[in-house]
Structures are given as C-alpha cells and as structure tokens.
Image (cartoon, rainbow, N blue to C red; front, side):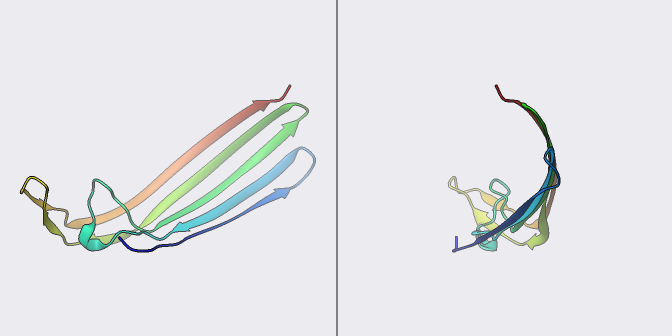
Length: 109
C-alpha cells in the first residue's frame, strides 16, 4: 500500500425558492499497488460524477439524484501464493462502470 489522496468538489445552485440543482465530482487515488492487487479487494483510481435536484413545497421535499462511477481500465499481471500455499493468478484487465439513482422524499413536521 502507498499514500494516496482524494479530491472532491461540488455545487448547489438555488434556482428559485422551490428548486435547487446540485452536482459534484470526486477523484480517489488508489492506495494499492499492482503487485498486491486482488479481485477480492478490487481497487483502482475512482472517478464519480453526480447530479441532482431538490424540489421543496412547504413541508414536503423531493430529491432525485443520479451518480456515475468509473475506474480506468488497468492491465494487471500478478501471480502470488495465498496463505494456504496455493498459487493465485489475478492477471487480467479490470475496469468498472457503476450507475446509481436515488429518490429522497421528506416531510417535515
């Protein structure tokens, strides 16, 4: 493992008294090295993009949001011996695309 960093930025724009628009981006640098890569702990640099709305009317609020997670393609060549003395090959090409949708509904009383 090695030292790593994370970067996060976002915004929230109040369009009117009832509607806000927001979004953001984050980047997480992986702390793992290729020599210790394992599909059991798949880790590489992460990029996430998010956007959402917040609509509020009185005590009622609805907040839909979407997010997209991406890890760049990486080619790994690794052969190791596990704790039981068995050979383990994790060589391959790894890439991740993840999508998420949320819907929040709030009523304040």
